[in-house]
Length: 464
Ligand code: FCB
Image (cartoon, rainbow, N blue to C red; front, side, top):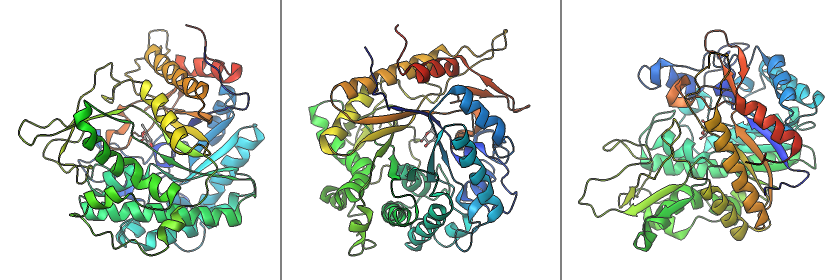
C-alpha cells in the first residue's frame, strides 16, 4: 500500500536551456551550452537548444498544460545569461520579464513555483574568465542570486541554488562530455569547491532578499553506490567521497571529508579552499533536493583484466571519476531505459533511508525522477508509454516505502514535463510525460501524463 502525506507536493520539472529556445532574443547572452551545442560533433545529431521546445514563446500554453495536469508545483530553472547576459552587471529587464510572467502565471493557476538558479547554463563570459574553477564565479553567482531574490523573492517560496553540481564539475571540467568540455581534473575539483562556495553565498543572498518563509534548497544527484562484494568496500568509499560527500560534506557538515582530500592529493592540494569557505558553504537548508535515476555498481579493479566502464564514459576517454583508477563501474542487470540506465527503484528507497539516517532533521524532495523510452506514436495518434508509467509507479512506490520507514520526503517532481533537449544526446532521448513534436512543436499527452494527473489528484498510486 502506497501512502503519501496530505501535504505532499506533486510536480514536474524542466530546465531553461532544455526547453526555452529563443537563445539570442530579448538581450539574452550566450551560455556555455550555446557554445557547446554550436560546436560540431559535441551533441548527437548536431542538435542545439536554439529552439528547444519553444517554451519561451509558448509560455501561456505550457502554463495551461501544467494546470490541466493539476500539479501543485513546477520546478523550472532561470537562465542566468537571459537575466544577466554576461554574468555580471545589471539585470536585463526583457529577460527577467519572462520569469515574472512565468511566476505570476503559475501563481494565478494555483501552482507553486520552484526556481532553480543554476541548471548548467553559465554565461559564456564567465567561462571565458575561467568558469567554475575560478573563485570569482562563486561571487558572481551570489550577486545573480541576490538580483533574483530581489526580483522574484516576494513570490517564489522554494529556491534551489544549483542543479547537480556533480555534473557541472565532473562532466563539464573532467570528462568534458558537458559544457564547457574541458578535461582538467584539477580544475574540476576547483569547480567542485567554487560550486559549494557559490551555493552557500547564494543561500545567504537569498535569505536577505527573498520572503522570510522561503525554503532554501540545493539539488544533488546523489549516487546510490553498491559494491559487488564486501571486498569492494574501498571502491564504494572512494566513489561515494567523490560523488556524494564532496558536496554533502561542505554543504551539510561544513567540511570536506578527509578521505576525499587524501584520495585526490595527487591531483590537487586543494589550496583553493580558503579559511571560512566551508562555513559559508554550510548554510542551514530547509529541504534537500535529490535527483534519482538509477544506482551505481562498483568493484575494485585489479589493474589487469579489461576494465568495465558501465557508467557510460568510454574506455580511454577522460573519466569524470577523478582518482578512481582502481574502481570498475560494473554493468547492472536490466531492464534498461533508452539511456541504457538500469531500472532499479530499490536504490531510491535505500538512498532516502541513508539520508534520513545521516541527516535526520533535513527533509528531502525528489526534484527529478523519470525515464527516456522510445515512445512511438500509435496509429491512434497517442503515445502508450506503459514502460514510463511502470517506471514512475515503481519509483513512487519506492518513495512511499521510504516514507513508511521514517524518511521525511516532502515532494516529487517528474522529469520531465515534456520531451526536451537532453544535453549531449540532443532530442533523441525523450523524457517527457508530454510529447513534443519536433516539427510542429505540438504538445500531446502521453499515457503517463494521464496517469500522473490521476496520481496527483488522488494523492495515491493506482492499485496494480
Ligand atoms: C539530469 C539533469 C536533467 C536531465 C536528466 C535526464 O541529470 O538534471 O537536466 O537531463 O538528468
